[in-house]
Image (cartoon, rainbow, N blue to C red; front, side, top):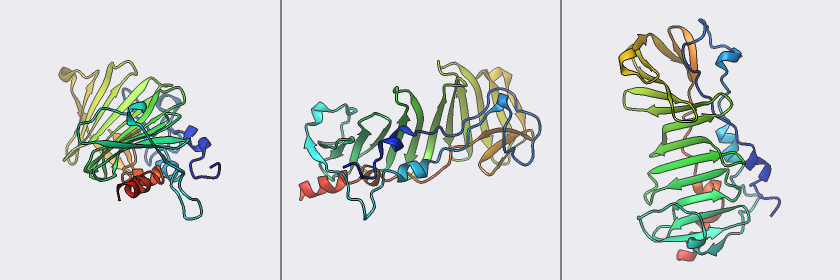
Length: 250
């Protein structure tokens, strides 16, 4: 199946989504800088849609040949929502809920991509890893919309975690060992709140705005937000797995 849509080169081409700088913002910049300074390096947003699209089957390329396997032989997370049925190809495996054939957990065999959902399909967690098994990116979707995100920047020793809440965006920055570097709260129409080192007694405030997916505080560029693209379709990403399972249920 060398000509399937799952090119192994695409699996290795994991691209980090943009993170945020640590500490104080850089000098005032407007509009957003095309090339941030070396001290405040921010990678461009990851082409998540293009990467996911590389897995999607087209009419000209048939889905992979899936075959049934014993779920006990696969590294599947524990769950209590029903009996699972499992399938595998030479590039990935999937565990699906026997009740409705929907995806519970799918993973590429090289370990660079995984999808995990619930029996109702109302949540989806997508994780991307490098070839050594280090987590690069995590996305959590609730009812098809991005609700939480995490980017792991090992070169700059920064982990950026984002939450989109009812009336605010929250950003926590840690180093890769878990030490808190910054906490930010951004509420529409309100000053931003910053806790350097996570210290609630050291609160800082100021003006902020979001422009073209980037956050500026006190007129200076702070970070680029992860793209809030719709949740990917696991049955399309792991092409043919759901169709094969549904056929077996008939």
